[in-house]
Length: 244
Image 1: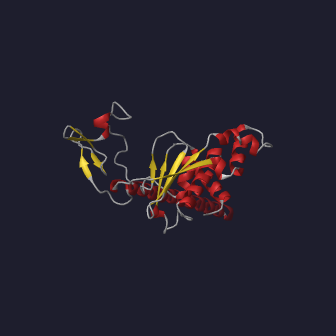
Image 2 (image 1 turned 60 degrees about the vertical axis):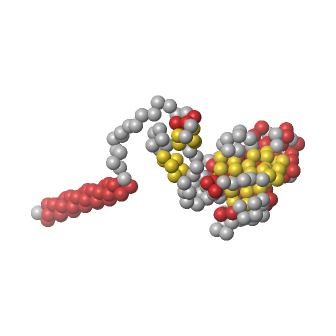
Image 3 (image 1 turned 180 degrees about the horizontal axis):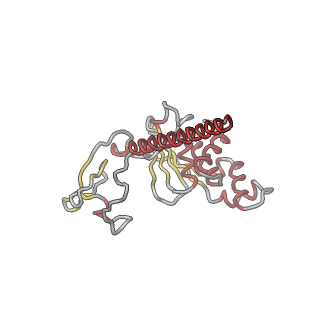
């Protein structure tokens, strides 16, 4: 595993700022990876062995993702919205899994570990660097049963919602009274009043943008050439006038 300070600096840059949650998240990830026997989780050899379940959408979650290299798109990062400062680390090769939980007591002990630091958050930030793992975390060995539809890799199943026609992947459909439904149709969605729209640049494509950029460069070059020709002509007229 890379050095803590290096990981923290890189994680804070990726996250956007340095905060106590970044320290907790980096240390949580380092401990979790050690417990499941991975010392370089972002390496080619180990990246496919790791599944991470993050239980909070806070600063620490970004740190865990950065240190482990786990990603939603790779299906190695699972977000479980429990609102708990905890992460479970699963080694797919061995089946070993450990849940690492940030202790609330650590907040109260910040003044003890960093008494010379002034300010709540600066004190927590420094104290969380100094605390031993046994103070900062509780650890549970757990069992995680992973469905084939939760594994990394290609889509294993696709069905269409009987109500709206939306394609649903990886067994996330809901069957109610024999009807196959997507979650929004079955249970309601986080959004409402959904209406299909059109938008002014809906025919935009990356290749079109590249062509526009190329045209702009050509236009700029042509303008610069015209300016140079104009200046050359003025210089020529000036020289002719002086000779006369």
